[in-house]
Length: 161
Image 1 (cartoon, rainbow, N blue to C red):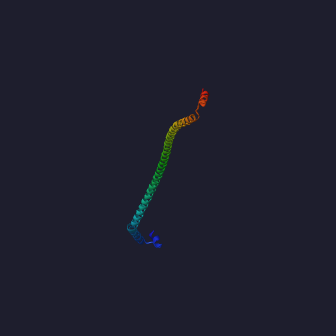
Image 2 (tube, helix red, strand yellow):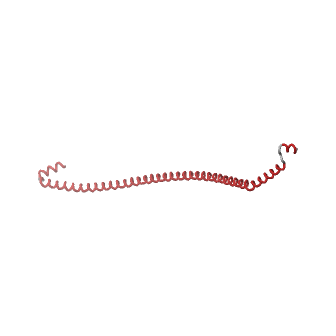
Image 3 (cartoon, rainbow, N blue to C red):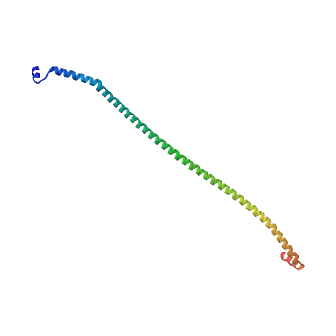
């Protein structure tokens, strides 16, 4: 077999030397080149994985914040609606109370004005009666003094009897 290999130009000593050189270069490259490259690649993979994990956490936090924001906005909207409803209710109640008080005050004022008008009318009527009686008596006295003679007196008595 060596003869066949020798004929094609194969030298086992050169092949062994090449094999030893190959392994020496391989181990040197592995120790000084491949390990640092492998370590750098692993570090970058770890950094990328950490970045992806942080991005996922950030997305979760963002989703949570969005959800919380929506909840807060809904709560604030409900509270504002409740405040507006309460304010309208209180305003309506205040208006109703004010109208009731105004009606009561109006009624009191009208009653008082009516009483004063009745008192004034009564006082005016009493004054009118006194004055009318006084005028009537004065006129009667004048009439009686001026035209009261015996004939007229008899005639007046006959008419009244």
